[in-house]
Image (cartoon, rainbow, N blue to C red; front, side):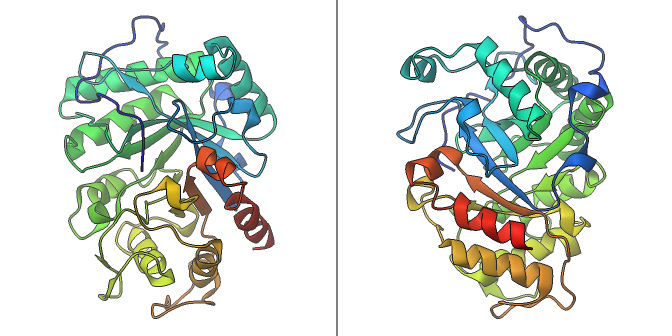
Length: 330
């Protein structure tokens, strides 16, 4: 994903946020309340040339909004967040208080709002028990302060992730935040056999709400059927999504498909919405497949994620409109 630079190699405790021992369960959404067919999009807390918008102006087609990204401070494991001054200026004024009000309004409208950590240039060093504990405490504080429903783990590059520490960090956060929504956006390479992310997914399969792999910016990859597929095809999407279910042990409703909203939203791998809807039908119903076809359909596949809402708005909502319509008809 083309994303803002985050210096996540060293995190720090959030001095400005009072961290509670736990977050009350009514402060976060129940995962049971999430729609069966879900459209997720990332919202930019930065200006990179895509449309800049307030959180409240996210198109109604989206069910889950992933706020990109949390910031890092200096102590390993700590995270912080604030509205980016650059977009605040461009929007004619947008404060943390305005953002908090927007989160509250979106949740009242039935939307889910989570805070994402990582991104293309973000390096997270969850490599010790101390960092894991600090992450859990500071993230719980941000969830309490801003009203987020949970966290998205988007640690790209596959480095600075120690599986035991990352597992501990999420389990500690889950204990502090009842009803925590947990999403992940792994790159395809790290979902291959013995990949770091795949082991983390197995460890956290009971905590995970939904995983939406990035089926773009990728080389050719092995599918679950043993064949090699190149990005840009139905097979590339379906034969890798099944890895999460067959090898990762996830349910179909814990799996969604991550694709760029436009060619400007990724370095490579953009596909027309029709390829995405065919992939959904293949996984869910066993129809409109390419070479790979699941022996038994993965009924209940969750939906689609896109990078990003901002790039889609820039392109006239050419992604969300057809994908939303298809999800509504499934």
